[in-house]
Image 1: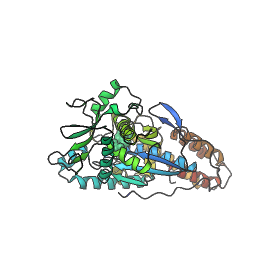
Image 2: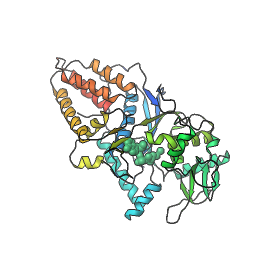
Image 3: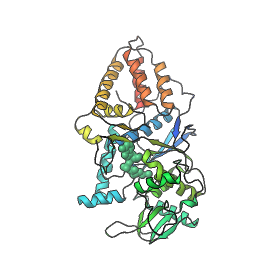
Image 4: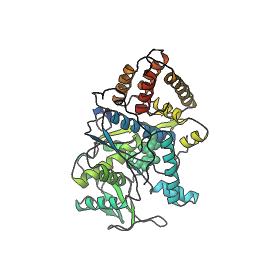
Length: 409
Ligand code: 5CA
Ligand code: ZN
């Protein structure tokens, strides 16, 4: 599928600031520790995309912004970044919404993906190099299921194909959860622990035989459509291979989605690990609940934009929270971000300011320690509150804020 246009990313090294000696450290969900990313020349990142049955809400935006920071920090460290994202353009919730509203599921997906592209462009989120829909990936997915079948890592229940989690000795290491904790999450997040005929309640559906009135594609295991986890598993290894640097998404994807996807990939390829680090963003809520399409308590990026909100204020409002924290959106988030944006704009338009070198080091340092954007923002605030005499500092600070925080002043 078409990705979206890339914003310009100015280079701090071209501006005379040496490449930092540190590495980017990120919190890995499986180990619960900060782990240094150690990409080669090219860093590989897969971030799960939207299920396009509704518009992008601030929770989605917050998650994509977190990984946009990863992208920007790696680039600043001199790496090329190979970034891949999917769009789950065929799945239960999408088909359900299409049925309810009488819209063709393909049209619904296309419309919402286009809106997502516009939102990401407005928020200056760097686009993936490959933006891949589940539908266009079906041949890849079938190929992957064939590999699992060849390893005896599939079985059928009434025409549906399952993956036995027992096939992967490292099952559980992505989320770090034990079976007791997995069970309720599996039921809550699209799994079917109670289905009769399964060998293990946690086994995951990888191919669903066509249901009446639903779309289906021919495959060696019958006409049907792919399960959810195998979609991201197949797309990620096709474009990034195994052991890519970061797989990311919101914390609701750690289990079962990333856990199952890793198991599928590890069993199909016989290699380990699927990703070197599994990184998860916190959940953004509104009125005491996780913002979610099914709950309907959503603040849409597109709606804020249409109401005239500066997308840079939305971006700053989200960056004011650490990416791993769970938090609630309120109007004051936006008010504070607008005021901050105005202060920063004024500071970079001044004829002179305090030297920017220390600020560059500080912002780079904060982001390299598990993307501490709130600390980076506070450092810029302190710089902007001072007066100084360095005439090149305002432009340098502007470059820094653009390159690493993605804020166009
Ligand atoms: N298509 C799948 C991933 S393959 C999916 O989860 N789609 S989604 O549209 O439901 O979510 C897209 C991304 O936004 C996921 O990374 C999800 O974890 C994240 N997300 C969803 N709701 C929130 C929220 N309230 N706060 C933060 N992130 C969220
Ligand atoms: Zn995914």
